[in-house]
Image (cartoon, rainbow, N blue to C red; front, side, top):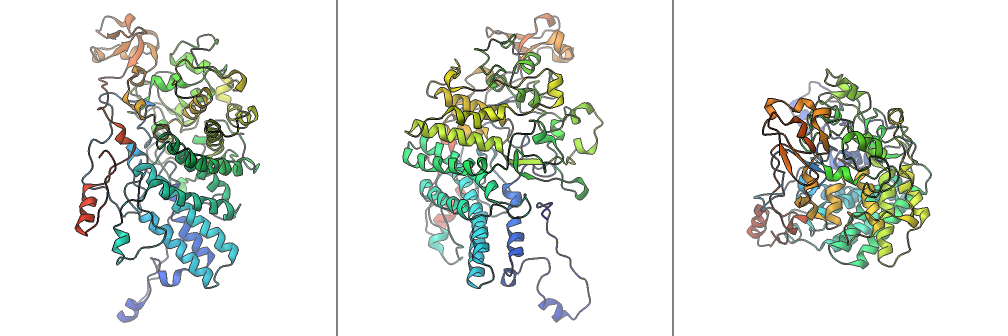
Length: 610
């Protein structure tokens, strides 16, 4: 059984005394010998397991931040910090290439660096699977499944590379060192690359096993769930960035098909409260989670994400007022339209009481100094962990010894990918979204059970969304239809500090949100410091503590005006990020790599704008 697929496979080395020549002639016991490795399906499985930590990162491990929820995904318009806001890169880097198999990434692009090691590994895997079929080592059905696994990972890697760089060189086989024309070929058009990815994904959906034994082995359902994510990204990129509706429809149709495979299976359902998706030590029985990363302190597989949610560890990048305002009220209306008492009062206490239950499950219910905006995210820890504040904390809630499992893909994302793809297709002549579609997606999410903590606070489920009375949010962008606006809102509430926000802005062509022209992007919630947070009314905060009144007036604490310190919190010394242009939708390649191509007599094109 694959209880821990993230364990490092360690070969046992037998120590013995032998003649030197005998010792030197022996094959390595700790590294793979390609000549005699490809002999069984079990060896295919072991090789495939090596892909998992690169693609299914979850909370990563120890203090590592790459691709880790909360610790890695803090560059977006959802968040603000004290001081100067972190910015996009301003010039092409000296070097950007890597041949490492480590899950390294470019944070401001939410994807990998210029590295084709995993492409090569996928192609090598495919070629070895093919040779095993030719040699009658595996059956046709075994071949179909494992070639689907290899093609899935190849498609996954190219999807990520394209999301970061746009055009990239495409390889569908292992290239020999002597094939310079291929090794140093220029970048292929992204649409050609993604058509190849599309073909790989179609093959995956037709050939991967529905089950491969342990639920944590990649299967058709988990692959389809992730394909819905990747095809939604490319379909909307083609629509909004490239104005290519034909390709947009092609990719979005596959996103819908992939999501349908998951939704129609009957294997997954919304039976978990929101907080349990992220803070539980075991997700084995959670029917909303399709694929997850397992952690176990007993064998040293742990992370630090819960620690940074425990109320004591600081959150330098913290939720801003703009994000908080996006949360729908429990009557199903944006706060400016809501008739709930106190819905327009944007302090933490009233927002907890009036907003969608995910607000209460995501944020602490009072201002916390550990957050740069005083709104603290405690989404990735269980309800017990935060009660230890200010410590000491048991190992499961402190340091890098957190064992709570990480969801990789869950039903909520699949249904939101599905409904968004259907809504986008409807704008291009496809079938109209129906109320049944909304009920199977957004309303199914809103009907999640509440846990005992939320119930005790009087939290209510959010009213269903109805097509007959769609909210007409006065803050809606004029170029976004009301239905798509509400779908995007649902994603924003659902995925705070997860993998989606920056990539969503890029595929919607909304990177301008990061310019912070809306002052709400650089503010915290409304606070009456005298009654809610008097610990900041001290000498050390004189001339530092500031609030912004509803009319835009900024008041600075003088040491004697505590009664007037009521307003939206202004993070200390906050200033905007440097200006940027649309070129930041895609990353530049390194100047060293361009020079290396030239040195071999070839050309590597730079990303447009760089």
